[in-house]
Length: 356
Image (cartoon, rainbow, N blue to C red; front, side):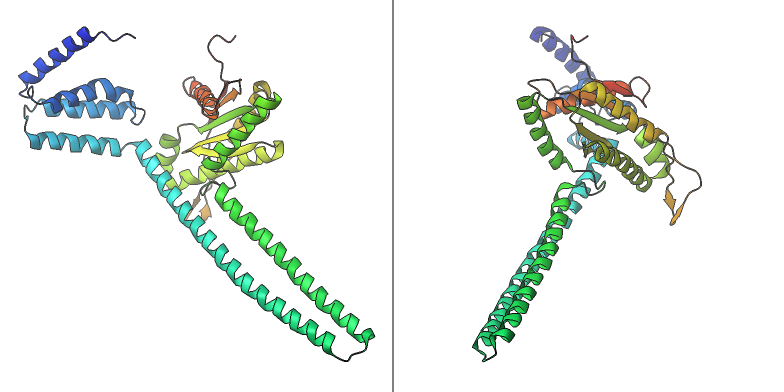
């Protein structure tokens, strides 16, 4: 839409006139505040519609007090900050950040332990080699009959090789565990984390572009997660619901050779080398598995008798030439929100504009 500067300036002059009637016309900060709550707050995805209304009512009520002092302005700004910090999404982001911090701390501990074990193993290996060398030299320097010496040397070599084979198995296991710690989501293991998803999508799109094979992304989101799960049962149960969804999604991914990851919050992503029509069938299979799953939360160490039912909305998007990883995920996200707007607990395939 074209910006008519003359019309905009006229509208701003009118607002300044209204502010002057309230005794706030000489301070640009009040004009900026009014423009913010009138024209920008409604576009925030951070706030629910009810929260947006509360923010606007709060500011307009404060303007009605006809107090243009710096102290009052500071109070209004503090109130706005409190509204923004107290949004559901902000709290969710704060929890995710704290979870990420714990993940980084745990990873640092794992890496530190790995390095310490490496140094210890190096010292033990030096001791073993030195002992082997001394024993071998002692055997060779002895006056034993060759028929006796040969079995002794074979026994020394066998002991040495056995030790190294066992140590190799141990280090392979430790390396696998460390790699897993770096690639899985700290809350929803064995789902991959966001960094692993980004890396996988880069490679998957490059392969689809070069080989011309199919590639689709599923965006999976729990329906009414805040109002029916977190607000009713608490965040601990909410985390268990997400773990259950992660388990169902991960099992499907393992069975069909797909890549499952946590995108953020209660959104999961599945990447599969399939065209959209087949990916839609897989999405519906996951949706039905979730719909029929009887989740029983654990309270005071015991499973409750009454199950919690929850559902998911899933968007599917197929790779098209020229798409970036962000484009592909965004397309699946838009399809998922189309489901949210039309009743939830369903699957939708993204169709670009102009597509039949």
